[in-house]
Image (cartoon, rainbow, N blue to C red; front, side, top):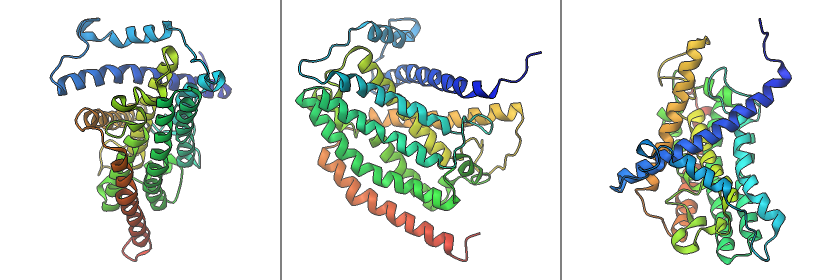
Length: 337
């Protein structure tokens, strides 16, 4: 009988599973988004390749892999090739500390939240490198917008996460999920406000409409990835959808009870069936948030850039700071606990 998997094989195997999950997630979500936007805008979407168009994503992937990567004249070739990799690899690495279930987590780091936020910030560097190295004015404008947007929206995003970290007293993702055993933070007043702020800023962080100013097609052609084709564009595409599932997974972990199936039910079982149920519970919540993100994209028009920044600096940051102060006062009050 085969014994347990050796410890030194667990990390490479886990990373391989996460990479496969990231590719499968992108393939599925592209098809789901096309179908949803087709129904929202009263058009069928992809319908010709395979039954109801289910093979369209696979064909598009083969097309991208078969295209030649062309480096524009005057561009920095090294940075031009590096940018898509920097956009795709960090969100995959961040999934290492996401607790998909009680027993399905690669590493439960003591600084899990800080680890994820540090890696997610690299995406902005990737966009800046892509815009600068492309030797294209539209790409450069997109990179400038990405920096201004990230500087603004990462502040309320981090404050909303600090609110939960302050509440739990730990940066460990597993501890945050365990603290919601019986009551999810989203069902508390401070947790609900922090969740709304995080979700809005998460949409902006992933450059999704109505906050997709770095790649506004009607203004900047394609923004920071105007000059990219083939797998260069494909890696940016994969990076966007991996960032989306990362944002949804963080929201599920910190606000929606993580792997806990029901908000007011205490769950302690760790058997096989419990692991399956908790994994399905986590995925249902995360993909439910992804469907909301897609719904928002194809429903609301793109905002102006000054409106985007004013909304952050004048609305989200003051509310998130006030919510953090209220949370701190509540935790120190005699009524808590």
